[in-house]
Figure: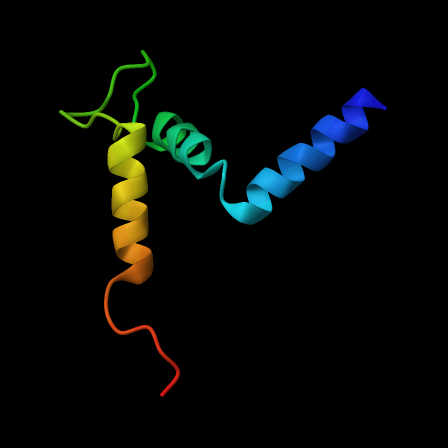
Length: 67
């Protein structure tokens, strides 16, 4: 039963975007690090605060209306 609740909670977090930072870090590690685990060049992942600020700026930048 507990595993079903955890799976449901992960699903809700994914739907709402609550796990966006964790997904970003996973993507960063998979795509922006070399085989030794070091970042390629001088790339470092964004902090949680910077990530969400950039995410909100992208989401709400520009005119958002129907007419």
